[in-house]
Image (cartoon, rainbow, N blue to C red):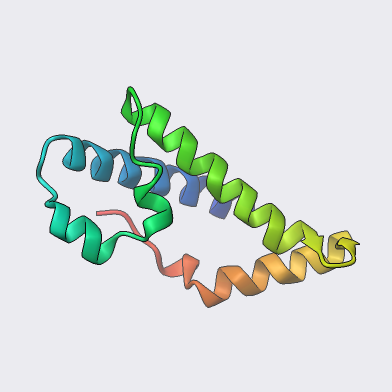
Amino acid sequence: MKDEKQTERLFELGLSSGRQFIESVRAGKVTREDISAEVPIGLVMLLQGPSTDFILGRIFESVQEYALKEVVKSKDGVNEKPVQAVIASNMFRAANCSLLRGR
């Protein structure tokens, strides 16, 4: 999407929330049972590394790859820019991203 303010807001929210979550996991404040029950398996597989920022980098890379597959690429090649914008907007709305707020 082309909304720079929203992009920056969501990036900062994800970064701070991700740091808080990973640091809680590393400090033992989140149980294995909670992780198994609540955290998607794809994310669980990324929760290893030498530092919180390293782990967040792995998660960011994974999310970028997912977005590339879902928004940019299609079974017939690469979606045109207007089609990418529509797909991204639809995903944004479907995930209620505008409602996400920090604590």
